[in-house]
Length: 256
Image (cartoon, rainbow, N blue to C red; front, side, top):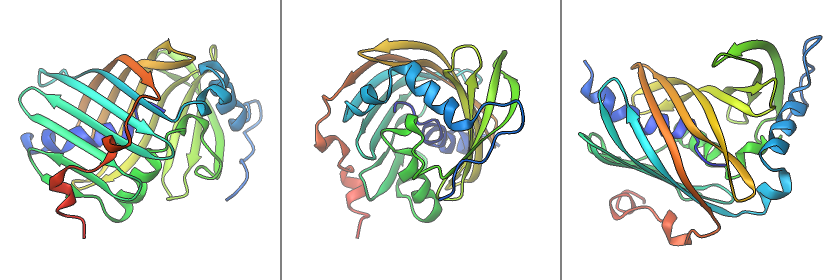
């Protein structure tokens, strides 16, 4: 529901790159728990399906940094059902970067590429990434999920679950064996600079209202190889005005 890792990773890659030279669940292998059971365990651990569905919008704030370059900034995330989203980042040394999906148009604005509209496969992926209830891993979006192995992820035993999306993308979730909470995600996305791969670690779960959210996200994106750190500080639910998701004027000028 909160930080869509793929979206945020892609949002920061462009400026940094410019500066740089319906199926059912597949059965789990013997001895591994069912994938849908692991997803449901995570949902229960963060507050439960009814608590998730009780909200229709959220507003989160925090900090973002790129340790290798010494850059730091602020991040603000807005989301609303069913799939509205706006992310704004103000990064020292770069300026303001923004990205959104208004239910039809995907867009981004940054100092390197200027205002751009997302098209084709990139637009399809952004639409799915903006799902407000993404923690539920709805079978309509993820028609095939499967537990593939038990691994060590972020220094802890986790179950690795593959998720095939309706756009053809293949993502992976990592679920902590001990707590049931999702420990991280992994996937690839199309961007203006080509296909990027990112792995994100989710830590520091904290309760905001009736729901738990990870407050520390460490995402490694490549190419180029970039580590981004996001710290969530505040979350408010059901306070976002619909006008928040209107594209900026520079984007409206591109929409025909």
